[in-house]
Image (cartoon, rainbow, N blue to C red; front, side):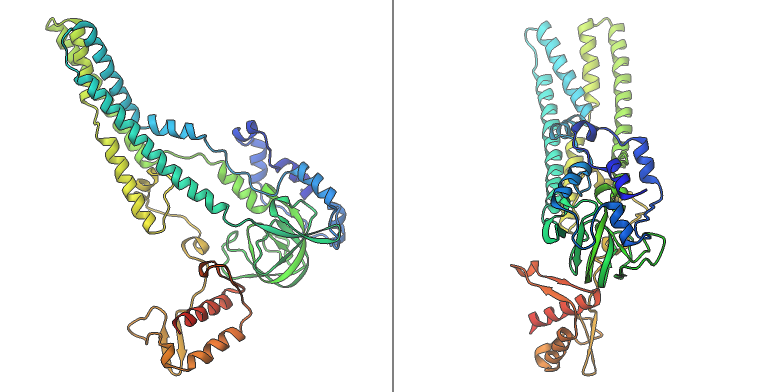
Length: 459
């Protein structure tokens, strides 16, 4: 299946109605198929004819605009999110809150019955109903605020660095947003660039890419313009969306964009998964069923006993309501909310952001975590652990078995630092602040450059 034929089927739709619908069976079955890419096996001239492009001048700006309107932007469509009012409503009436609302409603009903039948009466039921309503409202607002705050932080991460691409159109180089790339565009990549789409290389000079985000390979992979394997993921003349160029440069033709890319198909499959009820949610549902059954059983028994003892119907109903309300644990909801919030706060101090409060309890009952190691549990970054200089082994973590760093007392550190930078192909990109500085290149070269910068700070 060619890039031109698959792109219209997987293009991003703009209508709100489409976003609310689940992915169709046909579309999901297409995504679940084994990734079959053939653009890397054909000659460059044939690929240019297939995509109606030029390997030296690219496509025209007018043609790029037409394809952008036809196929949609080069971006992964985010999963549809619930509106804010729906999230707030779920926090207010979801789970255990519904039982408290029921108790508050019964209190108000009991107060209304008493006020219509008795001239001098107690306001205890009214006060209890107001308290239950306040507890549910405050707990719901607090839960919504916590989740909304985490969501805003997560969304801000996506907007921190806009991704740009170097494209050749009408024979001239341009820098455009990566979202504006279309199939057939001629794109240039160099060390430090994010790969903006799935690209078939036509030229490459010492190009190496970091595929850890896609395949988990921690070592940079060599890329050139020659087809080395029939499998697209193993071929050297393809670079994929979401990966990074760490060394060299290259030029290639965009063959897939947006959801048609390899990472796009994976994202579409994962976004269709339905969220399961958490362990805490299951326990609360079971607790609510038990409490409800006990409350109504005892209440009905008291109602029958009151009628058997010749109490009036109004008094018997008040007994029923009182027994049911008495079974409601009013303090359980705020206790759970505060406990989860405090746990989430402690995890935030350890650089772990909790987006859903109920996930905190679920993490405690987790027995197996299936996760990609490279770049997830680790930083996918090499670091210097020890340095051997003048017959002495130095340790970065100041281990008691080795000598700690003391560059000032040893002139050899100056010569070592000079060698570390002169015999190094990594590029140090200076930012406005020290925290914004970046090192671009092979992992080993970046490791040596960062170690040298630490030596400068000490010296």
